[in-house]
Image (cartoon, rainbow, N blue to C red):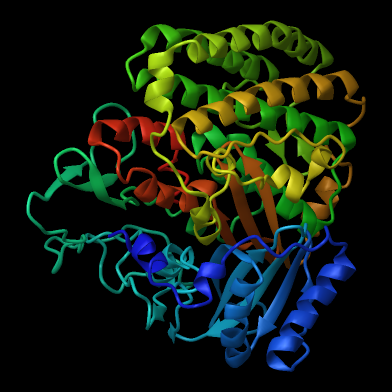
Length: 557
């Protein structure tokens, strides 16, 4: 059911003002602290006890009355809900603590409002539509009911799971699950009725090697006037799997979140642990991480560019992109021993030594890669029929970006400027920021152009990094000691993965992982496809889907 879309059409008065209109200066920690204090004081008349986090985040515990008063004000002032998750028995408190994580345009800091709840609480999805999936996820994981939520259906627990099964509770231990043989009810898809209305179910099983996902189209003839998606057919229990493990043992878990975001998720996880343990990685390691991150962006975007062309039947133009992508994979393997660069990132820096010879070889290759890539793009731009198929297809409107927290190339193709590397800079990006690639029409053509620009920007940035990379250690000398004496604590980290903003929150207690919360860009971006296809014909769906490049695995953790 396209409940996000329906809700946006009937938002409370605060809802339509969800815009990035209010600007504050890029704020030092003291300014951000004072800004949050003044906001809460203005709303509730009480000065909050704000805790400073490890990675430019602030934790703000609020009582129920203060929280309910604050949420509409956050909407009015342009805050964007970027995450919502639950922690059981947080620190010394028993029960459940909900963390509502917001960002504000113009600030490098993020704000996590903490709400202590029991087994029932209220929803904020009518004010922040992106909260819908989060709340359903929390209901499935912990059994907490959002009593006034407009959508109370299961999210990642399908019909075969027992009714009282909530795998993120501390009382649940990993093990075999007894499936329900004959579920009482099937998933209640939206019923769209009317003269000439047909529903076309696609999936969840697809032709080819692809994860499952169900798409239910409502059409009159070929034009689509409603699409409802259902995912989470292969829930893997990533977050539960991390509980009780050492931080080092969780790196392979982070890498397995989504195969083509191996480096991004490994870096995000390690950044959070490093913040908790007080580890500062060496400068050379910071350069190397950025090089690997940008290589990952290149091969991911190359897959999208070739896929878009393939889906409209232009195989000849696809070939150059596939050849160049394969060559990037070979460079990855030469650098790290893995085509997807698995096992390269470690807490404290880089696990595998990457010699200068390998970096020089990569730099030399990129000198030939760039003109060949530009030639392939020129070939695409010279095809009027191809441009005609891309242009005005699958338009994603800018007004959806903030309410749904859409990020990455799909948002920048619709006029947004947000990029974690620039708006929340980390590592070497603080000193060597990449260029922004922005378009405004929000269609497939804009997404193609943004990704093509980002490929070139990444290639040029890699060359710049190789030319200026310093010698030195690739792992912090204090890593071993710090990890053997890691204090209890928690930290949030963000990275700009190829698809957009990835968030990792790590909570360590007693030297092991107490709670690991991951939210990739795809978790939010999937909801965009329900809007982008409207008014298009059914045969355009594969093209629109490929242009958005949404990860099933990265969503279904």
